[in-house]
Length: 266
Length: 266
DNA sequence: CATCACGTTCCATATTGCGAAAGCTAGTCC
DNA sequence: GGACTAGCTTTCGCAATATGGAACGTGATG
Image 1: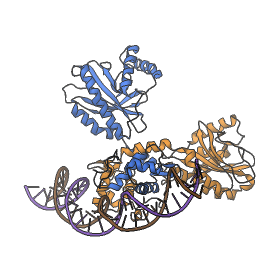
Image 2: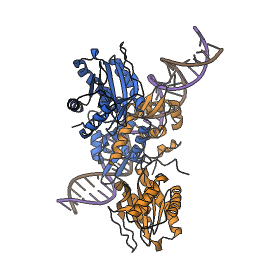
Image 3: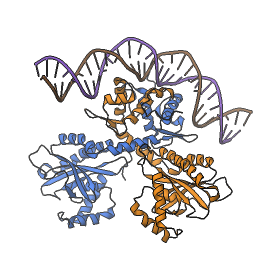
Image 4: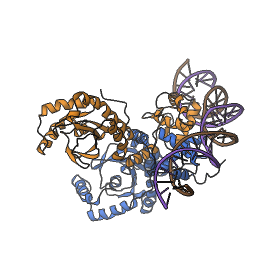
């Protein structure tokens, strides 16, 4: 029965629910990925006989999920662009993020935020109050400066360094708490390298937070999440530990937005 | 042979090849489309029993091609965004268009062009010389005004009317042949309504052409194609006839770019 | 001309998928 | 509380469907 299930990776074809052919076909789309693959190559990647591979690939070609050019190979087809676009169109960040935010809120007892960049401010899209007595004074729909909040900084992680100064100054001019730019820059560089951001009582006294960016199918930062709490619950050790948790949650949301991890930043 | 069984016809699926399950699963993605569908609804759309529908849908959910929210229904999943993005990334307009351009060139004996908008000029990406003695003096890489060429006008078909004047004047200032704006506008409105554009010896004397826009998965105009020839071969009757051919070719290219026709203009 | 690389088609076999019907769980109405 | 309903999930015996080895085209390449 199972000859060489060992080589078939990614999607567990064997366990699923008994729709082998469908699962194999879908796995084939993954196997093709961004490449242009010849039949022999493809059958090897899938661990299937050439004839089976051929039949599946043909079905995919007939339906437009793959494209075939003789002598060249198979590649992803137009139907995927079409459906991918539809999927993207109806994927609402708030809705997609909800379950993950709830899980995150359950894991740590603190307030969880979801936000997105809007112009050059951070727009708060969702908030789950923590189960601690302290209350974070933010509301859905609020707009906050990018450079003085954890969430905002997470949204900036991909920005070219050249724009930092302008944003920093603009935020101060608009009422963000004063701060030292050089020190801010030094920390920001760490955040960029780490893939998350902190807020160390910069925006509001006695409030600290840990934030991480959420990426979409294009790899761009589509939003960010953060966990905030009173400084007394947020010593340096806990922030470091939380960083992993928050980053993991952000990545899980990203995955639901079609983001494919793998190729990492430099 | 088989295009796709997107419509209510599920029995046709069997005829294609021998991979029923896969084809049904893929058809299911189409059936879901942009909606959020309940299981019962979905099984009806597919003309399948509820249990079969359930099994297939589950396989799609397990692999991330669909998303399921209890009490809400099924919708397109993250994997489609991911693959859709990959597909889009490697879809090169020139390469995708080639076979269609060749077919078009074979059908009419004239010169066929492919172009794209770049800034506010039309950039020529590909050219297939016709089999007629006359020679069209254009080369790949050429940039031409939008308002005085058929290809350029096709690229403008979705532009808001408010921008027409500015583009028209800018092109004249940059050396496009003089013309009367009111008359140009009147014709342009016809082109917008028809979904194609003509060039009536406006850019170059004794050259006429028929052009149509190519749309991508987002429905935006990603490029345009045109058929050009000496005016002597291009009387009004032939241009009208060619318009359909050219539009059909442009749509075929669009389909390969993930464009979904369907809702048409009136 | 022999060889290779690549895609396509055949066919007997048993694995895989099929759908009717029954089982769950949660909400709603008397 | 008990009887309905709406939705989703699971079971199971039968046969339709998918499988892979092998053979066949076809066009390059040495």
